Length: 405
Image (cartoon, rainbow, N blue to C red):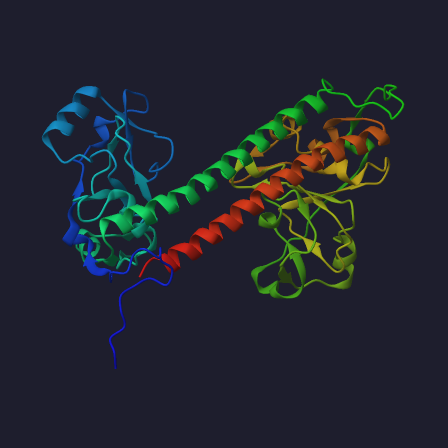
């Protein structure tokens, strides 16, 4: 039987040579910075010190310039373009060192001191996204130097490496542009929402006339709250759909979800039912930032109940526009007022009495609809951007699988 050639499934046509099998340890040694002790760091300072928890994020510790330049001169330090690798926690995350003044936690953040004439940094960056490491450890996994050195990969000639890396970088650039576009849209939405609910931006009737002035209403003047159901562990895994805290956290609407199941009787199904237009608030959470987050129920959810960590608000008096509800409780000022009324023990909590006293500005129904339509159009752009990001990430994943042996 003829030996299968070591070539990728997807390749630029001008290249024919078989790829070479290598180990990372054959293209360069594993390096790390000199150890920095806790007492040598400070929360504010001159040179960012990246630990495994802040790797690829914003720094939360700093070292002095004197220590930085001393250690950079006398000990291992990455060259511009080297690929830094997380060797603990979520292993294998990569950051390109761009030459900035910064220092990195020893053994937890390492790099391969590769010779670019054998394997370029640009190509290695993508290799490190697809290789399979042998890791050791329990809850917190660790990538030891020997495991990193023994990690296998396949490598073509430098010209082919350059062509592959250039092509994939163009995909990454497109991905980064989409992510930045999404961030800007989200920032724009947040800013314009606040201006709308501060009434700095007003809409007009079709004939150009002003809408009536907004009315300030307490929540108790609009509708009623209902705490969710509390169940023991033995009641889960069978029965009826159950909406929990995490089904609301970070989600603006609830419709057809894959939900947990809980045992509930006929009386409970009636007491804790969810109808179109109901709004679920997170009323209790370990994270203060989660309390007061809301999710709008878009359709009647038959035989579905909700958790005691949530509280249901049902508009029984005003008949607020369905789309408007999605936004009026998500405004930054409303959330801040809500959190100011919360109490903290093991969890941060908000109760019905406090929620009833919260005040929100209510425009006419016609203006509510205009506001909802305007903000929904921004949401649609954000959704389209999110969808493009997802498709581009899948496209890149497919490329990585086919362009590498």
